[in-house]
Length: 258
Image (cartoon, rainbow, N blue to C red; front, side):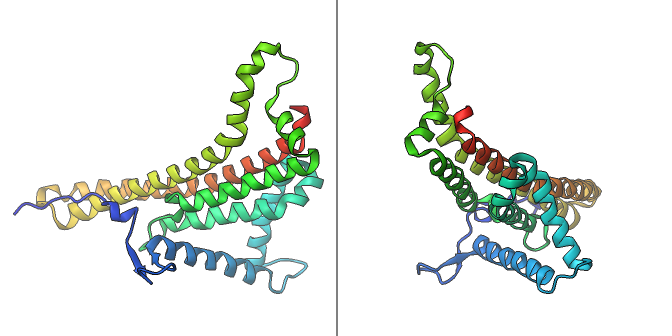
């Protein structure tokens, strides 16, 4: 019987419950991955900051460098030092949550980011959405903030009938939608590609005819190369998500200069 190549199934992306099935607390593989990576994230910063030294070394040095990157390259760069310090906790939380949850996508025997399913990206986008709208409403009041966000000053009156709906959709609907879909789609696409490369490698090495085993080398090299590329994507998705959150906060803070 000829060997067959089996592509990923839907259970890779929508796995059945494996713990507490049939209860409100049921967990599938992606939820377990999410919990594990969250524990890893908390453990990393606990170990890094449990006894900080004036001259950091080891894991403390790594933790401080990571926090310094978020502070200098995202918070302070977009919001300025005063507002950057104010919003650093939420930006750092978003950045490291996305980074660590994405990182599971290249860990052997896990091989999937829980951000490849829409649940967690929606939660992260909702946090960003609530924060930047809260900031704007707190500073200007609800009606002035909405007006300042959707009314473009200095344009002829007839154009407002076109621009106001566009600005409303862009500001209050598309921002959380694009944050969600960008993160989920990139991590899902990366997972599919890695599964295909390494599934093909297993097929060529262990199931294909002898004359086709050489193709396993090419699929293995391609899978390794794409893993390196996926590491870049993992970092970029965390950076872009946190950066856009900072940009949206800055826009809300300066809604009156729309």
